[in-house]
Length: 430
Image (cartoon, rainbow, N blue to C red):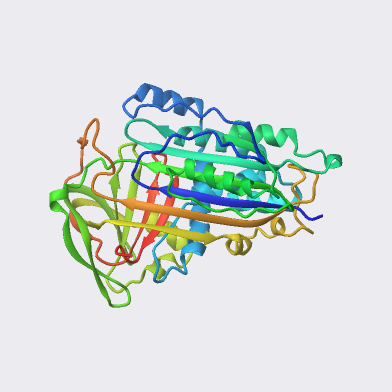
């Protein structure tokens, strides 16, 4: 009998507080293990933050690998977004595929590791664990929580010895994975999976999963992100203005406005880039195509995507900001993207090798992702402070206008530079 693994990556970036998670109790589903998540560190506790970095070293190669993975996948996923808003989380896909790679062998493992930019499963697991603990944030200002869960069939053939203990141990220790057993022939299993996603994304998603008796496992991953601007937008300065679509049509929306007398920005071939700081030391990067340059031109290849996020001529000077408020969701079927990027054997029963996970014949039947993003003036109510003063700013040498009144690209980065989200705003009113 063929067996398959399904993967859903339900990711969210929104400004709001996470709901408290309740234990999942349904017939057909049993909770086997729950990870002990890292303790949240206050964003003002610099000693604890320094200790966290020292105890969880993430080498530069890992950050480079995560970001190169981000450029490779985002360029493929977003290149068709010529007229739609899209938001994609490379971090969520990275962790879900890493969890799958940890149970793969042979060509299946090699293809996954090549895409992930890592040489072996041991270093992948260790670095994912360290990166997880560095990224994990839960304090009065900010939240970034990555959640993983494994849903294992509870009626595996006895002679195939169910799932490998080493894999389960690795999944819980390095990937902070909740472990469930489920009767995939029972519709309650699908409901329980949907509830888990909802609880880990503040109720943003209420997905419906259709399971069946041939399924042996589902890997679910969620990313919940919340942060405040270092400098809030004053709501009194939010005004109605016009956004010009690439089709030539116009829509009216609410634009948040702010000026910086001295602020960093970059100019490159066909774009201007600048960022707004977040209180947990991450940032939201905005990339505005030059007049006459289409968004698609800046997403034409991984190399071009890396260029618009990392290169260009750095400058400092007055920056005029006008940012439309927007809120939308996206969904992606990622199998074709992964196949195009060299991961092929994992999707065929004849070639897939997940013998590090189970002795049962298994292959990946689907990889999906859903996202939601929302930005506004404040994020949430201001807490400790609303602005940070920086010393030693370079004298103004130029001026930039980040008037985002036409389609633009954005990204969300963590404090260590890891790219969490990449998106396109083609129409803030839709």
